[in-house]
Image (cartoon, rainbow, N blue to C red; front, side, top):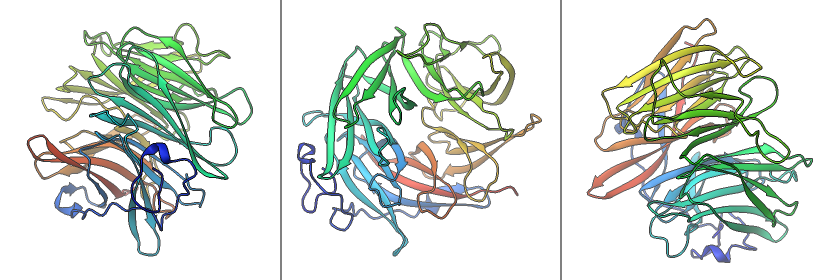
Length: 430
């Protein structure tokens, strides 16, 4: 359901519904005092903006999907596979939360999750669409690819079941199609490591999906970025392996998909092999060129995590390797998918790396062009059973400065928890 004026309806009744914040059912759970939940580094402020009647938030995206110039934060939850809208109200200076859709994994799916969300203008008409991927833990081949878009009649939807032998999605990313104004989407899945490419018709009702890479090993992370600094983006994918043969592979794009062989491959650090990895690409040292950060995990439980920065030349050769930190002897989380972001928040003029580590909270890493590095533990939970989850950088309240948006969950009983959404402000060059 998409902002219905009255009671919640099934997602099959979406078509033609007009989004109206005034008439939408708002989620009215009381918000906790964020200051009572966290210890903050000096200069930072945190605010809880939403509390959801769901135990987990996984999907997280930001963009103007209603066409009014104001961004919506969209969260995807489990086990009811819901999408929520979170909008800032400049009059009351509060955030409003509305249910957008539910049971996207299926009406009879008991443990479905909206695992990944994208907001993008797929057909170049000046209006953003919402893409959501649903998964079902412990079940094979129950992945669903949803697209929601607006036309003259209101909101429309399209769903395709994703074939293959896997059951979980570990990344969505957009890439320019050869057709003017069109975008394609790529996804990767654990289990057998299928990389799918999704192409769309101009009216978005036609979706063509095909496997462009099959790794026969878990696909654990995917992003698309100009990692070689040539002006041409590459697809970066992690080929996972429980037996410590994980590799980060970088492919080029072709007219039909991806290059047959990777243009670069990293499968170890200091002769040590790992069972998992996550990547995050951006200009971390603020020299005008992108670097790739890899979070190597050993073992999968996260007892040891090593963050390493890789610099490439334009041919794909690694020209510098800079270790940032090694977390050892603690839990946190070894799986950092969507928990690492490079960018600016608050009044900061420099890009930094932000990492969310479950019970350990959020860390900030600074890297200078000369290689000097520092780390600050900017947010630390001070209540038991609280974990920080995925993060995003963006200007949700339109004040011209980015916030760090993060989700979290708190367990309050055996098998019981609830999910919350927070904004972290502050930072700077001081």
